[in-house]
Length: 318
Length: 295
Image (cartoon, rainbow over all chains, first blue to last red; front, side, top):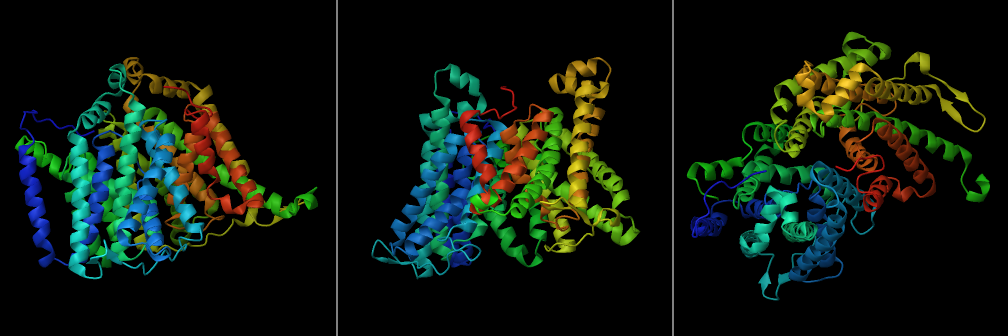
């Protein structure tokens, strides 16, 4: 797993504030330069990848079924907004809560095994959710849930407006991102890192490792759900694509490419992967091939990812 | 009795047969995964893609070289096995000292590449592959009609599985293999070329997948996506059985195939999820799997 190698001085994280400020400034300007729908898609996936990174990068748990949280929350949020007529904030919240609950059940099962078994179990359970979504009535099968109303958030923000929608998505992403930063830098986050580095030692120090892993898993699932619910409202669509195993692979790719165990890596990775998908879309299955090749190169030559390598070069954890 | 259950014997035995066939493929694939994992400590995610490749080699050999089904049973495993050994030599070899998860990620990437290339070339729809003339037709057993080819698949895969078990558990070569699984350094110290053995083992596991692919070609259509959907179920089978025992993977594979077939008769809605539900139950009761060893 990725390790941050830089010395941890008292103010060793100060540069992260600067980078964070730069990132916020960039996201405030970008929608006037780049197509906002692309940015919203990338932001949703960036949040998804950050949530995933909490597990793979900071706890050392490799989930290969994270699509189930993204997809399930998408379905619940879409259903809540369309059929129950809930306002968008409650619809997204309903999706997030559903993913957290699903995360609790899956987590309880999956943390009974470690390493690659953990990966296989999460993959298999995600496939089960996929088949459930394919067959259940309310998900609409192959069609998915279409033309979900965006609605009016908090009674004042009309999400039909592109820019309003963009800044709401940005706010949700930043809230999720800051929560993850807080968790990582908290004592709880330090214990997670201890588990990643040496699980038997963490146990011998008296930490209830299972409990820590489970909390991290549920948190990651909930934040993935937040991303999925937001995405469903933005695109007014919840479909099988989001629960399919290829989506689980994509989030692994985003995190790996950006840098596992780095704060900003998943954001960079998500933007690159989404851009690749958008610009190579007309090439059909070449996208899959390109993604596979990036996977192979990352694993063989480039395991720290873009931001991880950069951080090593600058001797600072990013 | 059948009238009581409201199910026709044809449907029951028909699904039982399909279950046995699926089970045969689960068994062959999970066996290959177990053999590879034992020595390489890698979960071979591209196993499904290589199974698909086996079917395609048979298809292409027939289209372009006029090679029929029987030669393909040899040619496809050899070709795909050689391809696998090339992958091991050039890529997987560099990962043995790292966390096991990197092996999974690399082979996942390889699976995407292989599948993408075939989808680019042949599209996503299935291509037909005929049943060899010697095995066409079938037997009427009185209570059901048994197509000859399906009977052959069950017998052949059972034979291959048992042969693999025999080689690994009962021969000197297998003893080296098992010893290298336990302690590769010590085995190497005894003068056995462990890196070469690892390459050959990977080739063997991959060849098993390709052989399963050729056997599957006349039953399912030859399609670039045939492997990826199967491999996730096989992962669940591996978790249920545990990777500790060769015989265990064979038994689990066949049993779960039959269970899946029976679910299709009695409660069709759950037929695609039943294996995952069994996996969840097994994890609750016996986390190391039915035949697994605790680490």
